[in-house]
Amino acid sequence: MQTKLKYLILALSISLLTGCAMGTKDDLLPQTGPTMMEVYKDQMQSASISKQPKLLLPTRAIKTGTEELIGYTRTSLTEISNQFPTLPNPTLVMYVYPHLAGFSNHPVPGYSTSFTLYEKAQYALPGEVR
Image (cartoon, rainbow, N blue to C red; front, side, top):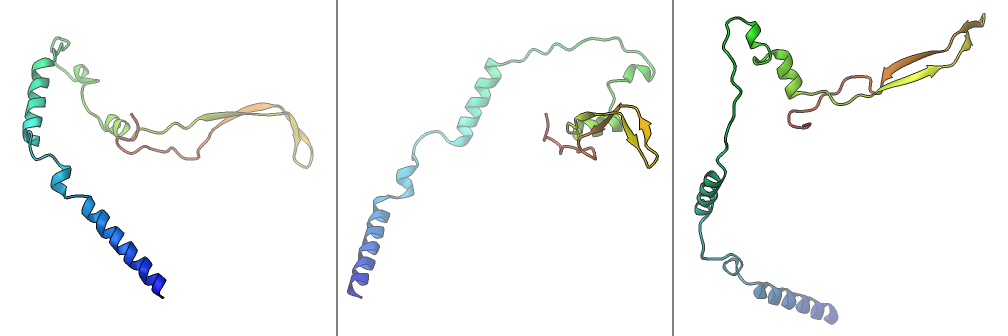
């Protein structure tokens, strides 16, 4: 009983000493220096000065009619295929050797058939595939 009490007192004293030795949060974080807003503004200002992008847009003549807008307009097909792309589903090709089929043993010539690895098309979530 006394040895258990000694071990308990020893464990408590060690935990108290280590807790006091760690210090406070003021010792861990610097108390001087720029604020986060100042750091952000400095970075944004230096990025805008040093990296002025030069946009070269292609020029094209403006025409009337709907033919001109093909490829530039959004359709339901392009929206769905862009937001939910299909995951790869490999096509497997299987060769069936010539054989006899049925009760009367009808000859069946050899042939190739193809099928997809997965039964259904699987779609990726938005942002899952690049």
